[in-house]
Image 1: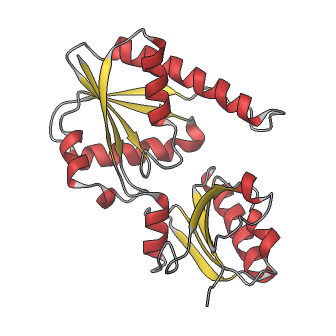
Image 2 (image 1 turned 90 degrees about the vertical axis):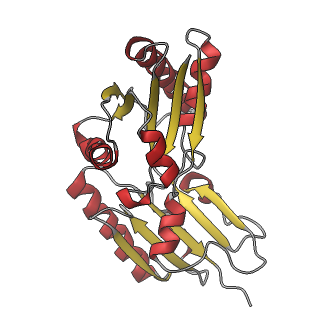
Length: 253
């Protein structure tokens, strides 16, 4: 039977790979790589660098084109569901046409496959369609938030206090109750701007673990918020894409 791996490859530094990840890479016949177009060609290149560095057996790489997505939908959840369905159909086709029944394939997942990533859900969606049989295994990786806190030399939580992971879209509705540390992912609109008067500290990072890494931290004043916002905009313009996240911390006694 076909075998698939969802392999966490860390936040960008090839040295983020675990021994387990390297072992699984060297069992793979076909790597499926999501192609998001020329604008994000760096993401394909970084995956290839990992394969060049760690894989010692013959393999093939199959690029799977990322379907278009409505970035300003009236119904966000419905738009994401449609996008995931289109991705699942492409994944299914790639597996059927590129992976023989006795072969092993893999998806290389940024960070950790279990954290704010759709690969596991997409693999399950392909299985649910019932057109191709396979078994699969998930290999954890160093997450973006683990890399962020390590690079800022801080912790994810304060002693005895809760942590929340959320998106910019949800944070815009207000600070979560009974939480002092909030990790924000998928925030294209710098929602931290709304919290500059709340005595918070911010730990922000972009392209963490790559040669283009940018780190900014400190008390979240209007001036620092402006600095991060402008730095982010310039970096996105320069690269054509950006992967960033941040921790907002409310100090506790």
